[in-house]
Length: 295
Image 1 (tube, rainbow, N blue to C red):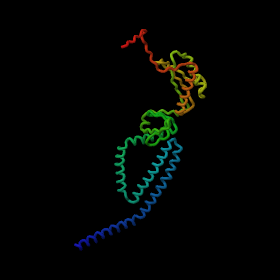
Image 2: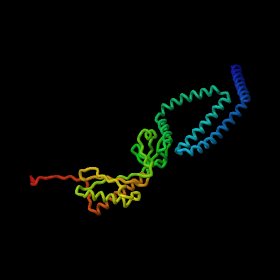
Image 3: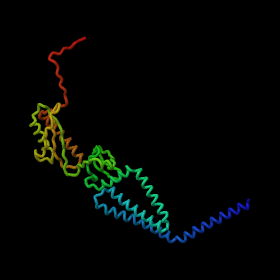
Image 4: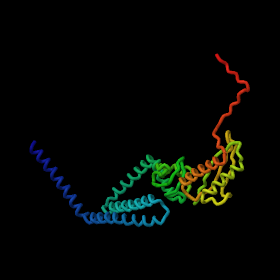
């Protein structure tokens, strides 16, 4: 029994030695290819960094968002490194491994694509938004029920900073599919003020007072013709009107401030001239003789 175990151990040892010698021979034979592969990999890393910086420098001349410029440069860098890895597999005569990797990548890519449909849609939408000239960092926009300044556009979402300084992250897909209003395209913004006066008011006098208040207090309004004054309807408790004028600003916040100032000034002018801004009231008619029964 001991002799048989000794023979098995000796056979196993001989096989291991033979295998190691084969590996050593293969290493010596493929040593030049291994050195070339290391050199190619090092060059691919260096080249990826250089080309990434070059692409970023070129993209700075475009109108792409900064986040997208960095992303594109990184993608180019990764592609160069992957190309270097494929060359290394070819140098080391690992073509079968290369085919296996490519086949596995195809299957994995299909599975990932099906699992991440929403994320991929946002990524594609983010690329689309980066090429749209009418939306960029610093613009004041309204979309999907939110209004604010565009502070970032990446592959996932558009980030808006609202008036209250809170950040809203809107998925790119929703921004692309839904209407978007950009308040910063032109150098001017329109201010609209709605109000109402009592039925006993002199409507011509009301119009003249409101127009004069706007002309006297807003620099961009030079004459009465620059102010649009419209009576809109006979309301339940008041005759309602709308006043429109322009200010020299792109910011939605500045529009809100101008509207606030206009409301204050119009209210002060109405108080000085005895013009009433009524609040909703209800009139109740009682018979001339009102009987009160006591129990």
